[in-house]
Length: 288
Image (tube, rainbow, N blue to C red; front, side, top):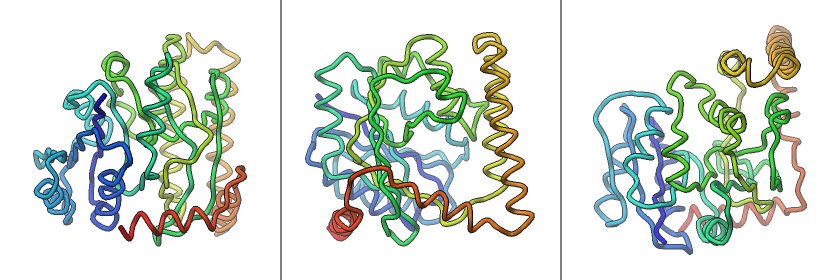
């Protein structure tokens, strides 16, 4: 069975080449790769077109517009030729066996979506941590308290599910969270999270106060949207959690203590995987 891999692109020239190579060098080779440019102003489009010339599986789509991520994700779903759709960001890197292992699990199960655990990397391709999650079932209470575990760029999903669960363009900062909450409310979120880290996920080397606060505010808007379905207790818990996060961020930035937040984030390594071995694997992927 073929897979449609979709990468939305916006000004990612620094990392895009390695991201594309990590897809083309997968052990599972039956795929198309859609590179969808969202009005980049750097050299991203030229990089995408180069790979389109050298590999017939690559298809570049561009219209010169900046429509933002939710709209582009929906476009990727509609443009996909095949029955399985894999997500990826333009600055992340796939483990060589990501598609193979996700396909084998999804193809032999009743799940609609599969996501994976992951290693975090910085802007210099250094592995910072490995985050392992293994969940067969997720609950709405986890999501309301911010524990929803899913790495959005690691998703492999059935196109039939996606066509019934398009992204809401009103939630640009939290389009994935809105989709997960909506699907849980509708009892249509049949997902498996794999315990093996099959993605190298790039985290910013700094925490932007404004971006973080915008994300929490977007989450509050999602809670407002689903107030009736969530119930008063869940709604209040979610609101309190988000507002406390905003207050905490504001406090640490006012005291110029953002480095503490970075150290706290980068300490998270809850797996039994060897970071040095993960670094060797990453180096082999990007030097291919």
